[in-house]
Every structure is written in C-alpha cells, then in structure tokens.
Length: 346
Ligand code: NAP
Ligand code: ZN
Image (tube, rainbow, N blue to C red; front, side, top):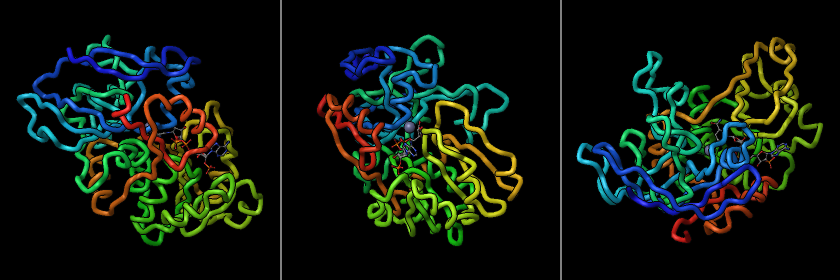
C-alpha cells in the first residue's frame, strides 16, 4: 500500500495536524497522482468542523486537487505519466442504480466523495487533497489544459465547476443579467466565467471593499448589500442570481431583484433553514433553485473552456502548516480569493 502524508482534522474543534496514512494499492483502472496543489474550499471548513453533522474522523479535507500523473494502471487509456490532472469533489459514483445519469452523476445516490466518505467497499475511508498523493479511478480524473498553471487551476475543480454548471444550465450569455452574491472563492469564479460567457455580471457583496477587483475580473457593476438603496435600485433587474453565501441572509430581499421568470440559485449552504415568503416567488413566477458542483463530463468541459479563455482562480499560495490560520481568514472573508496549499511544503 502506498503511504501518503497529509494533514487531518481529528475532531470538530481541534486544529488540523500532520497525519500519515495508506492509500489503496492501484488497480488496473487507477491513476496515481502526485498532488502539487490543493485549494481550500469553504466546504472543507464546514466538514472539518462537522457543521453538516456527517463528519468522519480523522478527515483529510481537500477536493480542489491539481497534480501530475506518476503511474497508470494497465487498463488506463486516457492518461500517461507526466500529464497535468485534477480531481474534484468525488472519486466514484454508483455504477448500478437505475437512476444513473452520466451527465448528472453528482446528484446520484451512490456518489463517493473525495473525502469524508467511504470507498465502494463501504468501510475504507476516502482521504482528500491536503496530502502528497492520491489514487483515483481513471473515469474520475480530469485533464488540466497545459496552458493553465497548476496552482491557480486547482480551485477550478470545485469553485470553478460549481459556478460554471448553473451558469450553463440557466443559459447565462449575451443579453442575460446575472448577479453573483458573495465575492469569495466561488463568487469570483462566477464573475470570471459568467463574463467569459458574455453575460452582464453584477456583484452583490457586503461592502465595496473588493469593487475594484470585481470590475477587473469582468463584472459590469458592483453593489454593497449593506446599503438598503441597493435593493431599491436593482429591484426586478436580474435573469439569474447565483448565491454563494453560507450565512443567514434575507432570501426574500434577493428574490425581489429577479425579473419575471428569473431564477435564484443557491450554491452556499447556510447552517439553518431560511424562511421564504410565497409572494417572493409567485409575485414574479420566480424560481428558487439549488445546484451542486457538476458532472465529470461538465467539469472537463469547464476546464477546456478555461483553457481556451485563460481562466484560472485568483490565489494566495500557502504552506501546509498555515492551513489552520487560512481557515480563520476564510471565515473572516479575508482571502483574495482562494487559498491554495503548496504540497511541496508538506
Ligand atoms: P468563501 O470564500 O468564504 O465565500 C463566501 C462569500 O460569502 C464571502 O467571500 C463573502 O463575500 C460572503 N459572505 C460571508 N459572510 C457573509 C455574511 N454574513 N453575509 C453576507 N455575505 C457573506 O466560501 P466559498 O468557498 O466560496 O463557499 C461558499 C459556500 O458555498 C459555502 O457554504 C460552501 O460550502 C458552499 N459550496 C457549495 C458548493 C455547491 O456545489 N453548491 C460547492 C462548493 C462550496 P463578500 O465579502 O463579497 O460579501
Ligand atoms: Zn468545494
């Protein structure tokens, strides 16, 4: 069994600490990856701290993985040693069930998360990207275009696809007015991707402190949600609102910013249920929806799109031992715009 070095959460309240563990011996259809960079997603913090109530410890978080192939199984056809590859939020999915849908496998019940889950045997825990290597089935490995730097490409594997998928699904493009709520790790990718698709992008942030960046990344306009005037000025403006916030915000106020037939799509995960008034929806035949990451096929489409448009994440690179400090800074919205761990510092 290959030995991996990583950082793990051992319970919901302790800092992450060094952790050595076994990866499974590679099968014929597996790709062995030397992890070079791993992004820090807010979901890592939710799960390390058991905020969703389903945490398995010890937990090695990390589902924004970018690295280089070091070994391939005999039946692997898509990858060779030296290829730049990525791994996102899941490493296997149901191959049996009747509802299996390869274009939407992220919604299938048999999905196996990159970490905080069990392999298909039901007993071996999966460990994520805050580690120096990983063994993944070929079908769940993504190809990272050679023109994209691996460090800044890592966040595409979750933040990128999480915004790309709803932008595509709700037809963002020329003539569509799209608001991105929250200019964080997910949000800034929404600005870049939506602008590259030709949509008219507005950022709705708590303050104007990141306005200059937002406009530089492709937003046409930028408003502070702490200013009550914003909600008056923008009433009935948007075809689509993508909400990346995980705090309790007033969804009714945001729904009022939609045009007739507009949709607000939840991406962030607030801890508690949020009340929505029926009039917020029926008053404009509006939709309140949700969206979770994207399929493998769609993730590859997104990476190819980013390759063609030279899109990567805005990152702050940190060493592995800075991870706990980085978590605290994410919680204070003090990151521009994604922390990426340099695994050479492990
Ligand atoms: P992040 O970098 O922390 O960004 C969240 C942004 O929300 C912050 O930058 C901030 O933007 C805004 N915000 C924070 N606190 C707020 C408050 N009290 N009121 C209003 N706005 C606030 O996090 P992330 O990595 O982008 O993840 C965001 C959420 O999406 C998390 O809940 C994560 O678990 C979830 N997520 C979902 C999926 C999915 O598939 N649906 C995938 C990945 C992550 P401003 O400073 O601009 O206001
Ligand atoms: Zn994520």
